[in-house]
Structure formats: structure tokens, C-alpha cells
Image (tube, rainbow, N blue to C red; front, side, top):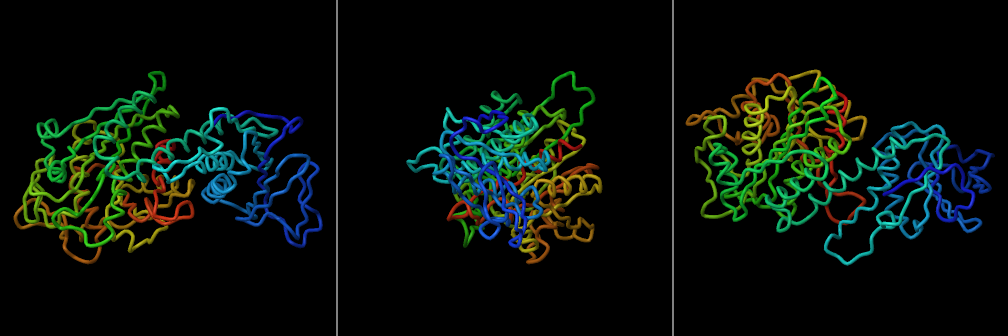
Length: 476
């Protein structure tokens, strides 16, 4: 999407989008824009409402924002207008920026409009959204110049659109090799390094837990290492490490899933989120060094699949007793964390995963579970999530839960076997492989990465994590 600043609507012919804060049904003064007036009895800016009017060949779309509105609500409303009003969004579209809008509100509005171009029908014949056509240019009507904010909003939406596409695409398309190729292509385009370890290279490195999960699939696992380094003149740089779970399809392995398997293409949502983050931070040229590990594998059923009661060795050298092959995500994350810490030594580490149904049972579909040993990191992650509408809430990492991962035969076991505290025991398992890193956080986002929503009839991706982690990195 290209944009252009305009000072007035003189000689403009097309559609004008006009965000409006709520007044009152009893307000005697009509809502005015130019020479268009709307009685408060018809429209008064109530949140989640809109009103269309035509005059002098122009279409006016008044968008109700309510009395107050947060970032996520504004972004969703803008996306809704963009999605549902396509027939009114032709070649010429202008967006009016209200004088009282903050930079964040401008960002949310523009980002939401671009997100509204997303269509889940990747394999259908369809016409592109008007905003995606090469000749389209969004006119920005404002008394201020918001160009830097608008450019940033577009970059955020582009990264989220890529993430949505990756997660919603079927597993016969998006397999580990596809993600490796995607990362290499975007690394070249946006400016970050990508190294890929295939099966043999990963075996030489000793990534035993990672390889155990992927050995039952005909699609070779791929261990991705992505490195973004800011320009040299930036000065002192903080170093952040990310790890994203990349199970491109999860059957459960030999502990095969008995329900919900059709949705398991989403088990790489956090790999996609981390890939989206890497695109976005490179696109924004943030002054923070970031190293990301994205272990990608399929958890399939085959005569080569790893088995319950096996003992395998992780990259850290610790042995792991396999209690349940459907607790596979924590295995690849364990090797990802160990590899990141040993080889790159970042100051901050965040791993993100669609890890447990337990987190869904705790929080439903409203927020992700946050585990960390660092109060400052906890606060910064929650603040970043609140700011962009990707909420997190903390759960404990008390040593009382260590017993859930204690094994008689190995250093640790991958599943407690208990029907309670599953998200916590999974976090304790990951903590075991962090070598007591002083600033590590684990995000379990199983309930918010993929689900029901208004923008498709079936369950679909949310791109949760892309903006949250970028905001966190930006604010360090």
C-alpha cells in the first residue's frame, strides 16, 4: 500500500473514511464533515457502527469509535471496514485523520486497513483487494504530517500478513523446508542472516531432542538460525534471543491425537511469529541485535517415530525420558534454547510456543501465559502486550513444580502425566535447559495464536506475537 498526504479534498472523487468519536443520541448538533451532515438520531459514533453517505459523487464512510478506544479495538474496526466495504474502496480512497488522534491511533488505523486485505482463500480464484492493486494510493487527509508513523504501520501489517499466510496455509505446502526457504528469501530482502541446519548438520551438532521429533516424517527437519545486526553506527546494542516452536503439523506422534488434529497446521504459529518479527525488526531497522532460533519439524506417525519410554539426549547433553510423544514442542524448544545460549549468549531470551491445552484451560482465548524469572522482563512484556492488544498474564515457576519433570531413569522427563498444571510443568521443563539464564521468558500462546474470529468462517491465524515481541524489543 502506497500513501500520499493531501491538504484538502478539492478535486478529490472517491471514498472518504472518517473516524468519529461518540457524541450522544440526544446531541442536537449533527456530525459534520465538510458539507455532509448526519443527525445524531441516525449515527452518533457508537463503537462498532458505521454510516455511509453519498454526496457530490463521493462516498463518505463514517466509522464509530465510541467515547474511548484502545489500540486493538481501533485496529480491528479499521480491518473490518477494509474487509467489509471492498465494493466502496475503489481506485481513490482518502483517510481523514482526526485532530485528536495520537500517533498510536494513526498507526492502528492504517495497519488495520492494510490487514483488511487478508483473505483466507489462498487456493481460490479471487480478485485482489483494491488496496493491493499496483496503482492504488491511499490519500491521507490531515493537518499534520504522519508519514513516519504511517510507514511503520504498513511495515507492521506486512509482517503480520506474512505470518497469517504461513499459519493458515496447509501443511502439505508449509513444511519445514518451506519455512527455511521463506526465511532465506526474506533475510536476503530485508537484511538478516539465515543459516539452515538440515538433518545431517543437526545430527553433527548433537541436536538430539530436535531430531527425535522430526525423524518420523519424510519431510526433513530444518533448524533455522536467524541473525539481525543493526548498522555499525548505532552504538551500544542490546542482544535479544528468540526461539519459536515450528511444528508444521502435529499428529501427536505415537501418542496420536484423538481429536482436533485438523487444526494442527497451526502448531508452527510461533515459528511464523518469530519469522514475522525478524522481517519487521529488519524492516524497521531497530537498534537491537536479535538472534532467533526456529526449529522446524513434523511430528508424524511412522516406524521411525520416537516412542514413549525412549530416552534421548538433548543438545545440552542431558538425557530426557519420553513419557508422551505429543509433548514434542518442548523438546525442540529445549534444543533451541540450549543452542542459543551456548553459541550466542544473548542478554534477553524469549521463547514462544503453542505449547499446552492447559494454558487455554486457564486463560481461555483472551491472553497468553507468561513465565519468567525476571520481574523487569515480565513488566516489559506485559506493557508491550497491553499496548498493542496482545495480552499476557504471569503464572508461577515455583520449585514445588520441579517434581513434575523428575525422572527415575533420565535427567528429566518431558511430561508429568498429571491432568493439572500442564502449562507450568512444561515451563519448568524448558527452564531446565536455560542454564539459569537471568532474563528468560516463556510465552505459551496456545489459546490466542489460532481460533475463531470474524474474518473467516473457520478457525484462522491471528499473528499474535509479531507486534508484541517487536514492541518488547523496541522498548528495551
